[in-house]
Amino acid sequence: MVTQTEKLAIEGGEPVRRGGFHGWPVVSERDEQALLEVLRSGRWGSHAGNKAREFEQRFAEFHQAKYAVTVANGTAALEVALRAAGIGFGDEVIVPPYTFIATASACLMVDAIPVFADIDPETYQIDPRSVEQRITPRTRAIIAVHIGGGPADMDGVLDVARRHGLRVIEDAAQAHGAAWHGRRVGALGDLGTFSFQSSKNLTAGEGGIVLTNSGELYDLAWSLANVGRIRQGAWYQHEILGWNYRLTEFQSALLLAQMDRLPEQIARREENAAYLAAGLAEVPGLRPLRRDPRVTTHAWHLFIGRYDAAVWDGIPRERFLQAWRAEGIPVSAGYTTPLHHLPVILREIARLEAIAAGGRQSYDGWIAAGRPHPSPDSRRGMCPVAERACYEEGFWFPQHILLGSRADMDAIIAAAHKLWRRREALRA
Ligand SMILES: *Cc1c(COP(=O)(O)O)cnc(C)c1O
Image (tube, rainbow, N blue to C red):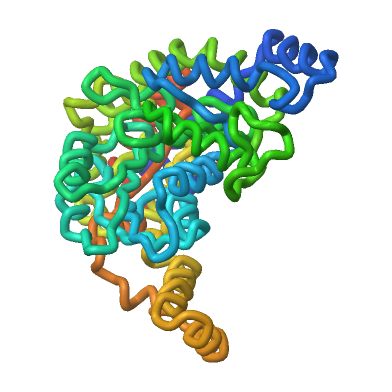
């Protein structure tokens, strides 16, 4: 006989927890005041007010960077960074496949070809050895994604880049405040980009920023995000082709208010993540990602763990996660398709290659042929670690769970132990 408390929720037992985890975003009166101030000022656009400039300064300073340009979102930030770095038609940019689509789609938006390097099996960060193997005469840049908020191996990435004369862009959309060897991310390479989309650790609903230590790249990034204007120029003076990627003052004001909380939230996530990692590591077949000792601050946008089905009598990850969720635990599988298997990415790469092969004629031929692209199956095994992470191993907790209490972490750990004890029920 199985007691009612030992019976899994998927068998009709009592769940370990019923809701009550920490929510997101965090809002106080200060946020309301900040928004009202902008509303009443009548200066709603960033060209009219001073909130964007104030936020740029503050965010850059916090990340030990000289310059910042606010933009509409993290995808726009990547496009601006790529264009500022001189990346364009046919250039190859090495990116990891275990990331949000924007890391690769931003390359395609500027007519560059994303080339996928594998990730490290212990940290899930881009693997500098794999990066080096993907370099061709057309490689121009590397995008190092700080996945989950844990900085990528920047020593390794910067070393490969230096030896091959490549630009480095940090995709720090998940890594606000993270630090590598005591230096904050964002200006460790040539340019760094962040997102302030709703789920991110610093948010205004949407938004983004580009950081750099280079005055030249700053001017370019500013122009690219401001319809090609130059900073000291006239309103209708457009020197290069640029987007309008500006934020509203409402967003900048909100970001300034939210910034006040960031250091305290970083500390809280660090503390809970350490506790959760230690607790989950006690459960057979669950392994939190390894923290590289050179990571001095982890931003914990995601708490990522690895599930080993072989240890769990072959129970598929989906079944395990379904049962964990039934216990009231907000866990997900995270990215379930590596970007090098996404048909849209393969199709767009094929489009660029058709154009590169012979301009208009070969492009028209590609269209007439029905826009063919290689099948995802033909890409199996190209980045085996990222494939395993997506298809078999990875599980995630979002950042705001780590803002909760010690009891929240205990519930997550207790539910995992309960599933392990009753794993025979998962086999059904
Ligand atoms: C969120 C995210 C982006 C894109 O940011 P948006 O603001 O949603 O455009 C880019 N890269 C990574 C790794 C992200 O997580």
